[in-house]
Length: 408
Length: 145
Image (cartoon, rainbow over all chains, first blue to last red):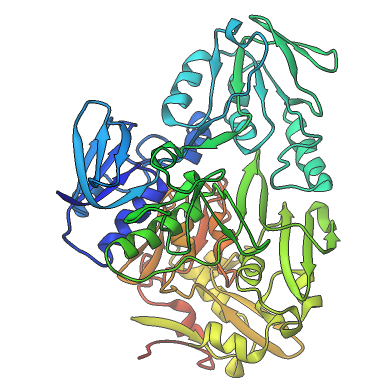
């Protein structure tokens, strides 16, 4: 009997191991994951393709991580079901692993909507995992004409990763702007111009009507020749282990602020879950690496008998394309303040005496001061809002708050 | 553990801490050579306005949001000190997004990896140069409770 069983081997799972070990130094941990690899950072696959990291450096934790943390790892093994009455998980190879406390950190998988003629396309890829990256890398040549469906974070990071290695990249998205999940219209236009200047072509407010083997006909009537297709339309949380046994699931697995699912002794973390966004006061899937870690760690502490809460999650992203950096956080509602000084773009959103969200493009220095205002729901009347609008700075806080920050 | 504490009451706004920081992390052994005609990008930075000034550098938080959010595992806590492995960092700036004090920042290097105060433990100085260089003891390095 393993005291703790963790399904998954990415951020949420690793956070869970570290959370458990901060309380319980010796209870047996078994970690089971479908991918055979040492834990690695998924967002780094685009950096791998453009040569900014390698497989050794993209390991999320050191080579001795499992040994140091006394984790029994079962990699390359897939869990097909959970029996929450008998408290055991069943693997595809027929083995069973009993648990006392279970962590579900199964992440998400690419979502591929039905598209006419898709099966005629032979060189078709997703861009989520290390294996995806290797397959794509093998397929591309300097003559490749790449079509990417999806102008979100995954599609555009893929474009950046391979841009120097292929002949052309065309990106198609149904949305009227790129990165619609994190940028407003104006901010999106700034980033789009920058990416276009690197040779990437966009077809927005458009979608593929039919695929031929090497040609896509768009709804607008445009036709695109390609030989490599990357599908980056979206992702779907892997929830079936929980939904199959009657656990509460909306879009993601429902979790509370202790990262418990609705089922006894089963916890969940990361991209497979939904949790509470304090900036919009709604529950949603926040598939972000820092959230996954915090959820995993919180769950781990609670699984080991500690008492932790994760109750200040917000959507937030730090990402860059071809040297242009973007940091965003929170919810874009209420009044706004926009600054476009020195070629940068910044927008703050505020409502009811609180900072709700922000977008910074270009100059991203000290952005975390804004993030903190959102997470802590700091009343704007308690700081010098005019100063903080100008730039993130501790000078905008009261002398007492600064003493708290710097002298204690 | 020993931490850096800043008392704005004693800060003269002289910016010497910034120069000592830049020198200590320059890898050079001559201050003039290290700093002459160089636009410094120190890991401790002064904020000043209307006669108030104070230095800001990494607080080495007990709850290190930068470390927990780091997408590569480049940031870690070693004996209470938050350290950056520049080899692993890809310059995504999730830590910049996360730090409530604005105390972690892009470095001048071409690949844009981040830099932060590591209490001079990794450079040849061996102990915080900003503290030694502060002429008015506005920056101190000590153990509190």
